[in-house]
Length: 322
Length: 312
Image (cartoon, rainbow over all chains, first blue to last red; front, top):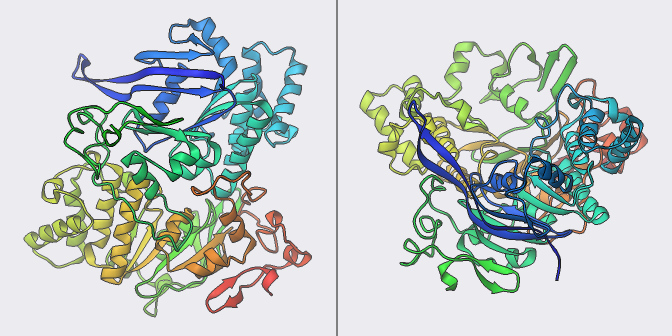
């Protein structure tokens, strides 16, 4: 069996909602509400969902960039939720993050070389000369020129900036990268370049990715397994082909049917979702999707469906499969 | 039409000699990546380009035989929002946060149509129902922040439709929306075209959206038209190397490709673009002539044209 690199159990991330002068705690935004999954070494787990479903909060909580409210995160078998600062620094040598907006994740007053070199410096990366060599090597690896070392972020295009973001994440030789919508700010012709790069790097360096995106086609291109999130919970998790060809959860089915293919002949039957995503402050009772589901049953508003295994590697949380 | 922006760094030729026509009842899609000049084209049509730095330096914009380029401000105000309406990408910033959405839709109607207060209200209400806003009567009293992104975009569409415009210009109206909401909004556009015979100029970078809605397509690159034709011409027989590249580099849901085929290189700066074909540095088919003179538009068949020397 493949080795689990990261495992998450019943992870929750709530953001408090306060009101009044004394900032009274009145409610919680349940951004991530009881999520469990694992990522194996060298694989890509895709995480897909619409805006506000908690996918970014989950990504940040995984690396403890934000403190999870409860639940456990195991990295190579040890629980990192109670690790101290020093241990966390060790963790970040192993697990790095790539952000959506390369513009705002790079310091505009630092050269590209300094931005990448900073990561090396923090993690004790040798003499200045060694660092410079390493920076140039990293730039080459992500398809930039060594000459970019002395450039500033504003001199680069969006795609080039995202390459710098990737180089910076790679600087410490990580084993896991959480990529939060890394290509959604890029034009399609450049997006393909970056997707190819992430796949090449995975093969060469046996990286594991948690790849977060809202675009199903992008997720399908890079992932071996895909998790679908709705209102803070995983509703379905399956291998890439299983999920795309035999989606079980009504939400996954609706999501897939709403994808617009670049094909003028497409005449698929669309499953129209009525209404909008409910607020994560006060999510619907029982199954959170029951307010929009076309196949809602009596039991749905009453009981929350458990994730159950339907097939090897295919789990779904829906009463249709009870 | 030519629209240039005169900046400190040089002249940005955002729209550099673009010609096309929009027919009654058709949906024409302007497709291209960021900086290709599609938004500048749309803004120029209604003469909404900020000036300075922008200026329409040449060409004409003919609407029923009237050149909007030489129309007076008063005449333009009669046309804008009334005969030609526009919807923008970000509904958040196009709505005024301190007025209710009902007020904002009614303002449009009041401005252009001579109707009584009661009639204005009724019309706003029916518009909101038409674009699928539930409990429209209640929702008229809501402020923009009480609406979700999809609902705000519906409000914008309702406001744009308030005077039964002949032409609707929609600049990336679905880009900021989620997949399932996007599909709902596109249905509204399809309805408008079919039921009201409206002409729509739809601007987007998403080829999936284009395939779902367009009758004709114009592919823009670097401020110029690279290729244009019917929706089947472009998707099934793309001719310009840029169009081919765009279609090939997309990941698809149906199969996982071993490797995507991206277009090499980066989008060029529109300050001092190269002499010849602006796509030449990224083109795998480029010939000596491409570097020297700008290709004219060559007819492939019928209304399918490509600006590429491969078809000279």
